[in-house]
Structures are given as structure tokens and as C-alpha cells.
Amino acid sequence: MSEDAFLSMRNISKRYVGVQALDSVDFQVNKGEIHCLVGENGSGKSTLIKIISGAVSPDEGAHIEIDGETFHDYQAIDAIRKGIEVIYQDLSLFPNLTVAENIALSHIIAEGNRFIRWGEVQRIARQAMDRIGVNIPLTELVGDLSVADQQLVAICRALTRGVRLVIMDEPTAALTRKEVEALFAVVKDLQAKGIATLFVSHKLNEVLQIAERVTVLRDGRLVGTFPSQELDDEKLTMLMTGKKIEYSRYVPEAQQADVLLEVRALSRRGNFKDISLQLRRGEILGITGLLGSGRTELALALFGVNPADSGEILVEGKPVRIASVQDALRLGIGYVPENRLVQGLIMPQSVGKNIVLTVLRRLLNRLGLIDADKTRDTINRWIEDLSIRVPAVDSPVQTLSGGNQQRVVLAKWMATQPKILILDGPTIGIDVAAKSAIHEIIRDLARRDIGIIVISDEVSEVYRNCGRIIVMHKGRFIAEFDAAQCTEEEIQECINRAGE
Image 1 (tube, rainbow, N blue to C red):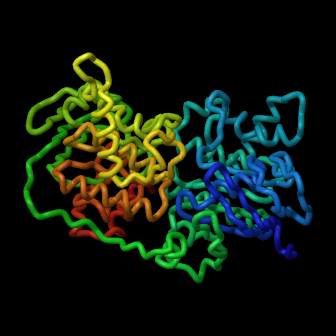
Image 2 (cartoon, helix red, strand yellow):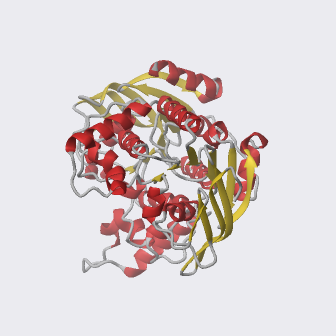
Image 3 (cartoon, rainbow, N blue to C red):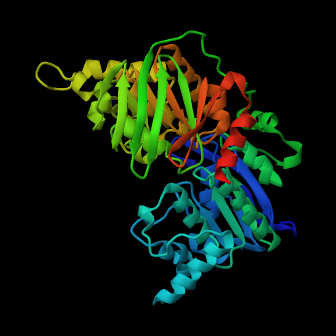
């Protein structure tokens, strides 16, 4: 172990039944270093993080050394006591506890206190929030917070005691650009205090912005560790995937298609106001803006989850009322939610069951029983059509990579044969290669004359895939861009001005 190293790991392997998650990986994080870990879904990143945190034990032959101390039976409590804190992608928060209790939890566990002093809990939480300049009510239940605020609570929790290494797994997935910049400032401040950060992200621009060194994993093996100044998007993508990913902007066919969906002065109190738009057959319409702008709330209204209070909705020129999800389905509207793990899939259920979940009534025979042949044909059709990589149709969907899980969500809604498809954050938490594949699927669906609305906080995503882009802020549409007549930077600048 070098003098600069805080964490040194050698010969780290982990095999699950039929899967080699990690294969003889060597990994090192230096004291006070900002280090990024990247790789496609299934590359072994999450497994390596769990081993560092002590949540998972490596296979025999591994060597783990932290701050000069070698561990032979490394446990989670050892990681906590050595100052290693992890912010997992799923946040690992307790929704039934308050903000203050969630933030102070690790500190309380590490101290081994048998009695809790509530004043101390409040002090610990307030101090942690002050470090990153956020102000969330301490008595609020975490389950009642937005995803962005929950992310901030998880970050605060990692900063409550003598932390030496903070591991952040996709920490910016639900943060606005301004909040990302604030987080990066915190990371730099921690570095100045000698605290290291291991940053995991699929957003390669963030990796290159914040990292000093970057470690790349592919298929459970170490590709290498590189100084960030030697990398760019193209080289990093090549290292992660082993192939060159071509980025192109989608150019729709020049034709004035029929209007599929029209919205006139749609409003919902506290969410959005006076929203008017048109979506044509075969069009990909982008909606972007900062988190909290009302984008998801608009999608939920169009899908009947939280109906609008006023305004008009027309489908194929006819006024309609969307008061429930059933209304939306009857009108040919499908919705892929932002959080596929909670809202989009039943994770323990099989791939096949998830795909046919929305069309069970269509699969009934004359006796009212599910027709096995129809069910099998439907499942196989969409697995093949969307190129879902799956060991077997009865495999639990939770065993798939993020990209393949998202394809299953798409298959579930494509099975309904929608006319209109709303995609909210379609590539959140998906690696660069899978993201490119999802984008191609979206473009192909548009070629089939499906009208598509893509909601995303990634400007590059809507710019490359949408013909028109609408910017939303505080529940209103504030600008509309023709992708063929503008630049990505102009859209980003509009969003930045709105957020100032």
C-alpha cells in the first residue's frame, strides 16, 4: 500500500450463482482524492461498492487495507468506524423516519449509544445540512419528500461524523444543474479537508468535470485507472464498452402529420398552469427544465393519475376526459414513469409477467382464463422486437441490467398498442451503450407513427432525439425550440436563466 493510499484492494473477486460479478480486480483510492468509477450496467461497480462498504464479502484470496490496517474479516461496522460512508443509488433511507433521524442514524450507530438525545439528533442533522447549504424541515418524514430532497438527505447523512471516504453512487440522478454544482463544491471542500470521494455516475460529462482519476470496469474486470485529463467522452465510452458509440441527432421525416394530442390551457392547482401543446403522429416532442418545473405532474395528468382541474384535452381532434388511468389506456395513451424500480416494474416478478401486466384482459379465452399460447406469443414478440437480453422469460426482472429493465417497461406499454407514449426520464441510471439503444428504440417507435413525449432534464437527450423542445419552469411553458434551428447550448442557457 502506497503512502498516499487510504483504501487499497487487491485480487477482489465475487461470484454469484452462474455470474462472475468481479474477477481479480485491484483498486485504490488515495487520501483526499476525487476518484470516479465507471462502467456499463453489469460491469461490477455496485458489487465493488458493496464490498468496500462491508455489505458483501469478497471471495477467498482478497486483500483489503484501509489507512494502513489490513482486514481479514471485513464487516460493515469496520467501514463505518474507518470513516467510509456510502450513498447508494436507492438512497437506503427510512421513509417512516424524520429528516433529522435519517441524517443522524450512522453517527448514532457508530457511537453505539444506547439512549438517544433528540436535541443531539437535531444538532447533528442541522450541522450536516449547513455543510452543503440546504434547508429541509428536520421534522418532515423522508417518505413525504421529493426524490431530489431525499437525495440531499442521503448526502447529509454521509457527512455527520469523522468521514474519510464518501462513496456516491449516481448522486446527481435527481438533482438540478444548480444542485449538482453545489454538490461538486461540497466535494471540493471535503477534499480540502483531506476527505476522499469515490464518485459513480453514468453522466460522463460529470465524471470528467469532477474526477482526478477514473477507474473503468468492464464485465467484472479492471480495464484500468486513468488520469482524467487523458480522457474525453469518446475515449471513456470506448474503454467502458469496447466499441465506438456514434451519437447522431434524430431528423424526422418532413411531413405535416395529423395532430394526435392537443392540450388547451390545461391547469392543475399547485402543479402547472395554462399548458397548451400539440403532438403529431410520429413526432418526438421533448419537455425539459429544472426539477420541480411541473414536467412529471403534467405527464401524470395526461395519464389520468392526477387529473387536471381545468382546460381541454383532445385526442385525434375529439374532446376527451381523462379522469383515470383506465381513461388514458382506452384512448391509447401509455406512460413510462421516471422511477421504473418503484412505479414501472414489479421487481420480484418475472420478465414475462411484467410485459403482459397491462394486457391481461386481451389474453383471456372464452372461459375467462388466460390463454397460454397468446401470452407466450405476446411475451416473445416484445422480447424479440425490443431486443431484451434475458436468460429466460420467467427470470425475475430485478436480475436484469438497468437498460434491459427499461426495455421491459417499454415492452409492457407497447403491448397495449398505444397511439401516444409519454416517457419520463427514459434513460435515468442507464449506461451509455444502453442509453444509445433506448434512444434508437424511441426513434423506431416514432417511425411507426406513435406520438411520443420525452421528458428529461438532460438537454442532450431531448436535443438529439426530439424535433421540438419545450422548456418548462415553475409549472409553465416558457420557451419552445425547433431542434433543427437551435443549438444545445441555447436550450441550456434558457434553462439556466430561468433558474437564476
